[in-house]
Image (cartoon, rainbow, N blue to C red):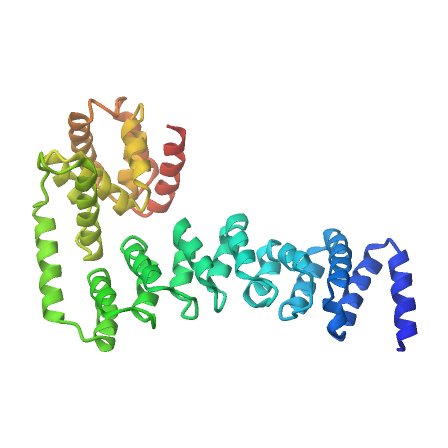
Length: 367
């Protein structure tokens, strides 16, 4: 087809208002630009193309937008407005653009982290060669799924400080530990810290990469677990409330990492009169924010607390004792009839912990 024929066909398509012709027009312009020269990148042409494409894409079906995204993913000529529009589209359309488009710069990726859904944020974190501003934005937001994706991105521009933050975050986000143990920018000091939070197979991987004193690390870990299991972290009048909370959080994290945290620990914490430690332990076992547990303790009835206990697999026979201990330490709350709790355990058996957790999160929002 000659240039004159191509121009004439484009004119005819431009005059048509049918969806099919508008889609053909869009794809024809893409093909024309793909074979164009540097003139396509001129500011005036870019502005014109941006206006045309944004108008055409707005009315296109999702399958066509996906075809368009695939054609533009590695091209360096598309107008930034168009690329950013596609990057915020449905994730199946946006994924390839986010992963590959050379048009997207760090500023665009930071905006995607702010405006996109979690699925978009994950793709940004997985994108090769993301820069420091993007990494820092991900760390600041601290969305677990996005952090896990970042931990697995060996090509990201991760500074020593960013790596330190990632290792610290892996204390609570277990999914980060495996990729971090194999990350090329992990230092010896960070590896030693990570060693205490991972399972045996990952410890072997760390030992094979670094010269670490395995016996010393194992002794330190065993001592921490022993002290934790004996409840040797005690409040003192000279320790600030925030420091005490941090100590308890670390205690629970160590127990959890060593697979020593059990529902029975909840009763032990309450019998020792340590309500905040109970809250931290229940939140860790249920894998919910501690605010959710506190909301359950502040509720008018015991239903939310029963849901939390059902989530962690606490035996229904132990709940009445637990409830009494909680009320003794929590100014009589949660009040209400224990019948509500019995109904919870009747509804959510041992094999329905996920459903109990969903009900707990919903109940906590209503408090």
